[in-house]
Image (cartoon, rainbow, N blue to C red):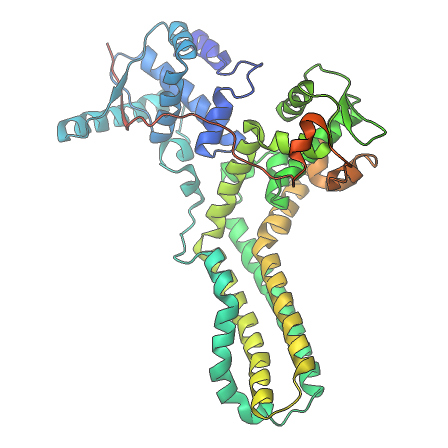
Length: 457
């Protein structure tokens, strides 16, 4: 192994520090990758290119590494710089998918694996052995979708009330009010306690199964903030607050923000905020938040983290837990609906019962939403917090502190601005008086076909 060359390849940077939408950000955004996995794939791409340059036989990338290769070919100057550093022009050979080509590229993949292991050791499974890196979580996909189940939950409960009413009708007519509601509310509370225990145990078991996965284990603090809050605004809050704390942004008496130090820092999210503020006069926080969330670096964080959330929520174990919870809640609702049916049938007063039913339906949906998010709002963050607190070095990092303590670390003068109570906007800021919502940043990508490999000499 040419260690000198490899050390130079390791130092090679794909990004211009002044680029707002550089190579790695574009790569992560278009493929919905996390920051860790993006850097991991870039390292594996460097290893692949090193093997291609230092061996005369044909080598072939994994599908994930090939995505990076396609993207890098578009950045012609950067690609030429890397090839010049390697001392060899690495040519991309697309596969034609005929049988002879398949056998050739299959042998190239086997050769690549052997070369890689002899030089770098074992290949990372999530990069080299999976088409979709999140398949490395080993989660079986459910045939049901949580969103569809939630939409039908109330209708199933109402439909179930008819057979339930026929079965328990003799009992219902013997229980007078308000005893029925009292017993029912006690039963409802007991069911909630049962579900709380059951769902927590089930989701902890699910997380224990996947927590060692390198992609999940290496989520950044701001990715964890978004996973927990499911709001991109929360990430912007943290970046802006740190700039205020470090005296780079000033809150004016009219509750607008003014940039007082234009020098960039080491944090890309803070730099994004600084670049936005350079273009405008003092602005409302609402406008700044909306503008930041439209930038690729923030959008990338959202997409990469949301994809992990969706994969977990689509898993069979997750959906099964929610289905059982819906069955319990649905059965309870069907009982109270049955009481309503018998009341109407017997011409009894139902006003208080109807009010109670409306309250119970809202409570059921609220609780259902809570348990759907429980894994992301409590179980995963709690596990990370335990590990983070063990490392005292993390206490020096504002991102980890923000993840640990949330809004408690926000400046008291900044907190009111996060509610977007910004007064009247004017000038360029007035167009952003709507709610702070994210939209997709612009992107460009390639639609190259699959890759066979690169040729040797």
